[in-house]
Amino acid sequence: MNHTSNMPAALSTWSPWLVRTGAISAALCAMSLVGLLIDDRVIAGAPAWLKPAKFGASGAVFLWSMAWMTQELRSTRVLRMSEALIGSILVAEILVIMVQAGRGRLSHFNVDTPLDSTLFAAMGVGIATVWVLTMLVFALHVRAPHTDRPLAFAFQAGLLLHIVGAGVGWVMTQPRPQQLDAMQRGAHPFVVGAHTTGGQDGGPGLPLTRWSREHGDLRVPHFVGMHALQLLPLLLLGVRAARGRRTDRQELVVLGAVGGVAYLLFAGALWQALHDYPLLRMAGAIT
Image (cartoon, rainbow, N blue to C red; front, top):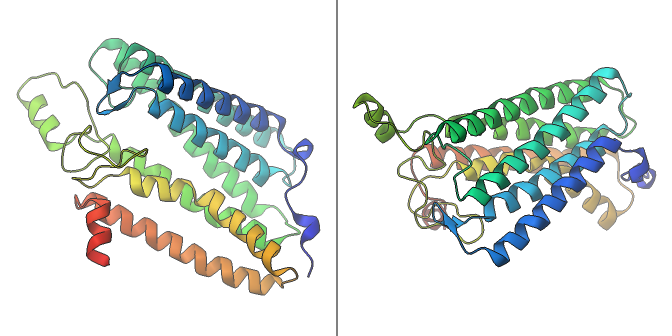
């Protein structure tokens, strides 16, 4: 079966709102990269503009992936509302992170002042809304008829793992033992929640990602889960480009195998993070 005609459609067939907000996210990423060049301030051990740059890039990739995924779905009011809210909220989230970077303040887990607490709470409500709407898009995609079954399966398997990976963010917001101790003593903590599980954020980290080299880091399974949405469809396109004509059954077998590995990687990364096991130390133990 020749799937060449089922390659991603021209951008004109994709959701205009998701395409535009993805472009805005990419532009915000570019602005943050400029900030990295001209602003040498450090927040919690990382360059001040690194987080908004990463979120801008991630937001653009996610929004364009969703535009690709939904381009075959029937344009209903529910779908258009979901696309509009997802795009708007993610752009607003990146803007808040940029505002906090400009102020020299943490954007996540920061409850130091009323303004910091309000911004962090607003981000939490926003991302929870995106999470629910993403589940709605997943349900619409599963129920819809598809002419390209392998590509539909790649999107659905990837988006499901994305949803689970995004849920790791809720674990990050839970108070750590030392923060609970401070609350019980009547102290007002500066932050509530953390990326790491056994220590404070801001310690030695890997280049670019800043994933902890000393403690388990929930950003690792968060990353693996969140980007399965791009991995599986792009893998399928790579297989088609390399092999040419294949049957649906062969492609589904390949996707099932790779998807299974992705889910196992996510589970392993989540286990090591929850058990306060650094990624590199775990890799060294395996090898």
